[in-house]
Image 1 (tube, each protein chain N blue to C red):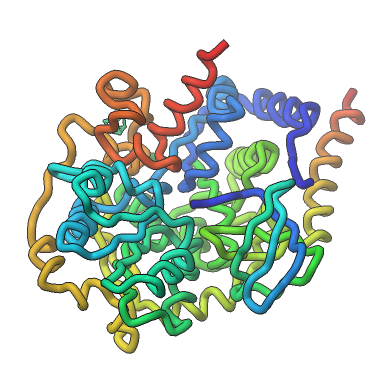
Image 2 (cartoon, chains in turn purple, yellow):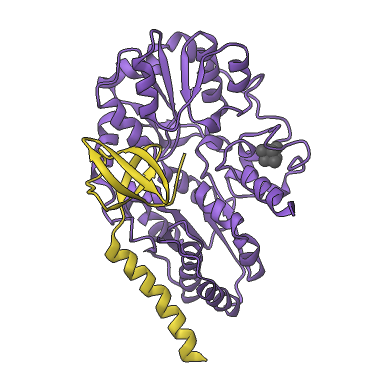
Length: 362
Length: 75
Ligand code: SF4
């Protein structure tokens, strides 16, 4: 149900686009959009009709800066049990990854969500830190757990980020000329439509909030192309079956109670104002940054090198695509990743590599 | 971390619901939404984050149909 994959409609959209003789660059900021683009071969189809689509800073694990990766490893080495999403396990730090630390005897556990971590903490004698990674889709889930009386031995290393400040950064930096943005359906489910308005109003960028079926994405691109052709710049909602104008109020309230916005680093970017979510003061007993400040504070003050030769930073700013990186598929593969974009299933390098491989198989 | 496919709510027990992703059943936390049995929900990291609006889904399908109809009219 709700699988929008009808061939006839997609052919129609593509031929409409072709007739428009476009030469435009669009950006989206979502691993699931990238997955749809590559898995269904849409990226090449769009390119053929003059539409270049870049994945910007839309992979939560990829944008997590080296400091936060090092913090999780330092905590694990100090004997704290770490609960993390699987995508984080192989992200290379300066010397090691969480997988390496687990192999050395560290207690690092993969969870599907924060509730798994809370249940594990209840059965655990020692301290457990949940690594809270993700945008406005996962941040309310962490918030909800923090607000539901978690056990005393549970805390969160909040690495959560919010999307609109990053969009502001991309459009103000002016490194890439964008003719439109495809906004992330599920982040929008939480935040609603208002936080995007400034991009059209102040930067003249056409925007469409789009769902994740191939036809959602094609329709979203078509709506952007129409805006471009007609000289309009506004925010449209293609994914109205899920995204309400006002967003999810319960989720927004939980986030507001559990977090305070803070300036935050993103991999590949200068510090982005108010783009991070730190745990609110009255929940500080569950804030791993405070609880284990002796372990994590020294890391905050250090500079960490990006993996040598890795171009994730440029990719997260939408300046290049995976194939532009000379290490892609040679020295850098999902089995032996050089950068986070090859580790996370939402990372552009990982997605491209996975489906290229799939295509080569008979 | 993220699943874009809507899942159908099969049963509810407090904040936890059993949902069906086209054959795969999972337990999800529904404290962030108002969901009832038979609803389709969007699930992220073990939480339902929204209930699918059938009327709006129908409107989107209508949008696609109109696009196709345009084609027929032109042909
Ligand atoms: S292919 Fe590997 S090295 Fe190149 S940008 Fe992607 S993750 Fe970094």
